Image 1 (tube, rainbow, N blue to C red):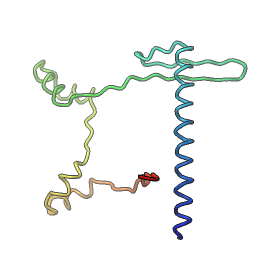
Image 2 (cartoon, helix red, strand yellow; image 1 turned 90 degrees about the vertical axis):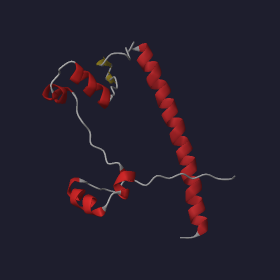
Image 3 (cartoon, rainbow, N blue to C red; image 1 turned 135 degrees about the horizontal axis):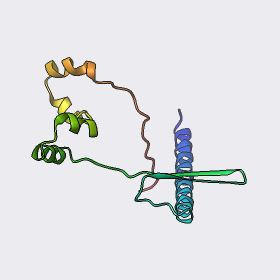
Length: 131
């Protein structure tokens, strides 16, 4: 592929990325205004529906909850809450610590490989022009 074609595609990508950013910003502004007009309570899980003259708008609000794994286990222990009960209200998510994994002896990681699924992700791009 020629340098000219690569540069042309890079410029097209930057213009598309800017249009995308502007469109997302505009969409979010409209969503914020709709939420205000429809009186969405952002501190409550729930769904609001609007149906009129063929237009349907559905706004679903959710609260994000994060668990301090160490603290919740300490509190459960202090209050005699069983592991069974704790495990029924909290999901434990195993994540690979890639830095540690790469530094671990292959005799260990090779045994664990069957429990690890690896799939390619979409490549990320960052293209800039100038200094």
